[in-house]
Image (cartoon, rainbow, N blue to C red):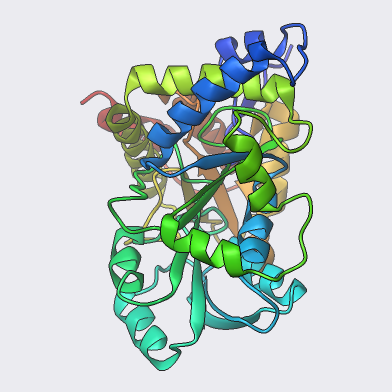
Amino acid sequence: MKKTYLLTPGPTPLPPEICEALSRPIIHHRTPQFQAVLKEVAENLKGAFQTKNDVFVLTSSGTGAMEASVVNLLSWGDKALVIQAGKFGERWTELCQAYGIKPIVIDVEWGKSLDPQVLKETLSKEPAVKAVFTTLCETSTGVTSDIKAFGQVVRETEAVLVVDAISGLGAIDLQMDAWGVDVVVSGSQKGFMLPPGLAFLAVSKKAWKLVEESKCPKYYFDLKKAKKAYDKTDTPFTPAIGIVIALNEALRIMKAEGFENIFARHKKLADATRAAMVAMGLELFSSDAASDAVTAVRVPAGIDGEKLVKTMRDEYGVTIAGGQGEMKGKLLRIAHMGYISEFDIILGIACLEKVLKKMGYAFELGAGVKAAQEVLIK
């Protein structure tokens, strides 16, 4: 018999309450019963985004909300600034190019975060930039960006700040209104502890002015349609009814725990995971901007990173993530977001130790588990 454990940065495990909600008989979406769910969801999403702005719910993956941001804010030929520090930063660039937007790319070394001063200097040289696209948690590298500092820079310009918080929201503090963030996008399958299928998008008043001016082609992701339906507690198209109902339960769980407690819990799990990796002699990929949602470490020399991930998954039922893009086979990524407990982390570390030892990596067996426990016991 083999149990399975999910320690990937999306999808993440589902709490029993979510599984129960997903198993309920489906209801029709154009009914007072579903409107009551939407109304509660709309209010509680504002708490999760730490905003007074409307938060739209789209039936798509998080990338749909990213695309919606591009096509609703900009027009063909507009300039946008893209902070590209990993695989998902690159996605902003690709989306801009797909719609004829001219991306000005700030390339950041993988594993590093951008110095806000570089952003300020670049914007001063490019006054025509209408939007700055960045990422809260770059899951390909395990790095968290300083969104608060970026907000302070961008709010002094005519541009809007757009943040991909798909992997960070619900795990890492992001204060949309207080930090001057204009658009925040997120997805259901990470910090919100749900299956994939929903995307979320919050828009400030400053950003909505661009929505009114945008001439990019759009239909399904037209935020004007979303706004018209939202004001009537409705959706413009058929929503993912079951996942929206489960979202309502997830938001209730999060609200009951309290977001400050949620952020503290994620930080403790992240600290324990990083302490374990260091104790095992592994090198953290980011030493100064490591994310509290996912930890990335370099695969030791002489170890086949892809085989290690495959062995953990197929032989022991513990799924972690490998590297992406240029770091394929060179990184291990262990998530500690959403419905992941300290004992899930301990088990994952123990499995990693076992497989590394069997693959010939020299270290003291149990060192990682011990180091993690010492953090978690405090």
